[in-house]
Length: 446
Image 1 (cartoon, rainbow, N blue to C red):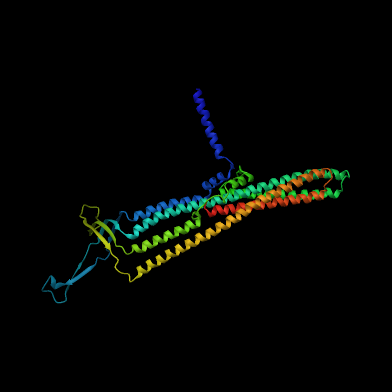
Image 2: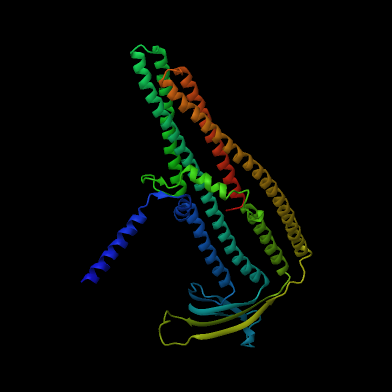
């Protein structure tokens, strides 16, 4: 009994644990990317394209396999054809020019035939079969690229949410401090310790920061909705991020793109261009295959019946016809047409090689440019973070000094604006670094 209860308890825990897992609303960056890969409609369509490509391979393969079809026919001659011959062929005594008339055929006829054909050899078929398999590979590559694109969009949206959350936290902290400062200055003004203008100045600062806070909260909502859209996540469900901005920044320090070795040939555009080159190689093979002979076999069996009355279901004779054979088509000359088409395909292939070399150079330039920009952005983030810390310390000290009347309310609002400006510069520098990080990820297709 105890064993039964233990099993039941474990089973219920697994069931409810699975339900909770399915209803999870908190995501790390990696989890958000994986969720998008499973739920984004663009990825779903790309995976369906792979399935279509698989079916296309079989469709092409079936062209070279045995083809069998059945054909039935029934017809009634409303006017039976009449033939005439010289009457002297049957009656030497007939007058010259006299003819005999007779009908050729029966009023009703029916036939049933089975036809079979088998391709034995065809160069274009072999190339087409190779291409269909390559097309499946292209579909897989396209699906992988789509997945990477979706991950990049989710990554960028995730970063934007982190930045928006950080912005809200900053505004909330400053708003709280400003509100507390206003309550104190209000009391001082009411008791006549400071001019009313000082309290009003702090109130203006508090109102401004309150508006900025409300705006930041709305921006956070928009950023989360965009992340939900990229993930394929329901807009009606809550969404939380398990990583903070500092977590991501620390992770980027240890796994900086500047320290990661990557091959420029993994770029999605480079891969697609290289596959275009391979497509043109198949085109060249197909043009050359036009010089090869085509060989096929065929078999036909039919049963035919001819009647003066519609009595095909009676036990009357049907006349069989059976034919089999082999056909061969050998190209001899096309007046230079095939040669020119082969030459055009060769020229196109040479252009592809040149385009691929140019693409590699362009991507290498982009790599150098992005690496330099990312390094600059990384250094700027560190500098702006230092400025934020300095402005925060200055502001905090001023708040304490304001309580003793050493610092005026006007100076406090100026220091608050200085802190807001420092925070804004820091946020902008982080956004720029994240943008460059996403661009580098796209460059290396990771």
